Amino acid sequence: MSEAHKSRALPAGFVLGSATASYQIEGAATEGGRGPSIWDTFSHTPGKTLGGDTGDVACNHYHRLEEDLDLMAELGLDAYRFSIAWPRIQPTGTGPANKNGLDFYDRLIDGLLERNISPVATLYHWDLPQTLEDAGGWPARSTAEAFGDYAEILGKHFGDRVDTWTSLNEPWCSAYLGYASGAHAPGRTEPAASLAAVHHLNLAHGLALQALRATSTGDPKYSITLNLHVFRGEGENSAEAVRKVDGVANRVFLQPLLDGSYPVDVIADTATLTDWSFVQPGDAEIIKQPLDVLGVNYYSTAKVAHWDGTTPRQMNDGHKDVGHSPWPGCHDVEFLPSEGPYTEMGWNIEPAGLTELLLRLHREYPDVPLMITENGAAFADEVVKDSETPTGYAVHDEKRIDYVNRHIRAALDARDQGADLRGYFVWSLMDNFEWGYGYSKRFGIIRVDYPTGTRIPKDSYHWYRELTHTRELG
Image 1 (cartoon, rainbow, N blue to C red):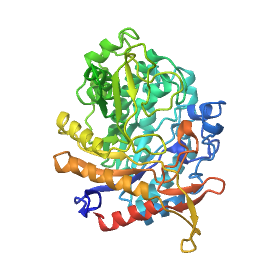
Image 2: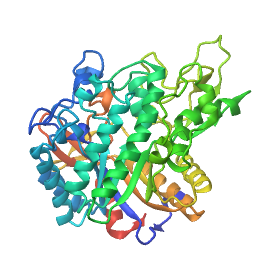
Image 3: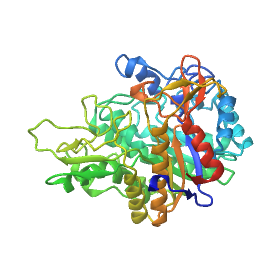
Image 4: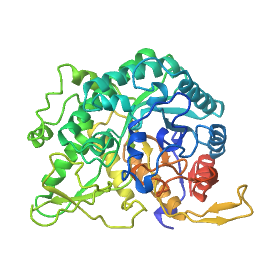
């Protein structure tokens, strides 16, 4: 029997969850007092998303909340990781809370608790209020300060019921894809501004955790989620290439968050772009907040090499290529194709990279508990008729089941070797708006028929349900 199919019991207390994000599933973009976000603006700009797709309706989760909660309960989730739409709470990013927005998340949180599912709330999953972007966006310090005020509202209102507060989801994407490459909203291509955004996102995290701790009356855990990269070097000077990309991808977040300082080599590598004067006295102390858990999002690895400056530069970094690099200070690094197999995103499948990443974090920060907050895969699902199912349809997604099975095992391998891993959240609960790729990529364990909104649990949903009930990998 292969390792991938050997029976394996989950550790006691190991959390099994699923995750989503507000703009990707909610819809109701102009309802309930919600203001416009940068993703509303970006997706409505011709040429920015595949097919001109937007999150206006998405999965219509806003109007199908009870149905989706029941699907989560049937799935047997221990926890559900969702994000709160900042413009649904504060339509312009500042000022008093919007009651309709608070009411929606009250229904969501209370509905989870009624079903014995722990609410894991992310404050920011990329939908910045457009008004704040107009005032400078994440490269401006005022946005971090506004985020602290937003966190205070959430702490006061929901802090008695939330199990885990997560400040930010993948600030790497917000900073570099939003402000350096322009592949994501707001679509700016300003490398210096992207580094200012890195710092102000880190600062926003610190201000938010301070505000949440001061206002939450329950006993929540406090966290942040990072999409940490695993790099493989190839060829001459590959160690230097790895050092550079690791600096702007991983250490520029990990080191200030957990050690209280920025890597000196990253500051040197980016000296021609910025003098880092946006870092003010006292910021380091604000950013370095005690963490109860570090969220880790993992999908694939990347292969890097030193670029000779003459041959065509390869940029197989797994992120949508729109002609600008999301890697400031790494002009002499290129990204080579990784070995397959691949998902529909073109990302290589390498579970061993997850083990390696978790062990690195355990080695460098042994006192910080870890949680896999996203892991999953997009595949070209085929819908077939099946009279035995409630919907009359089924999706036999064996590749997704194999992907999730192998990655949970890889995570548990790291746990066996000492990593303090507390659980795993599959991405995603349902198919959704996949940012620049629109609705062309499906990550869900529940299929969404977008014209009708019908939910069709895939075979992976049933497999995951079996796992949550038996607590054993088959």
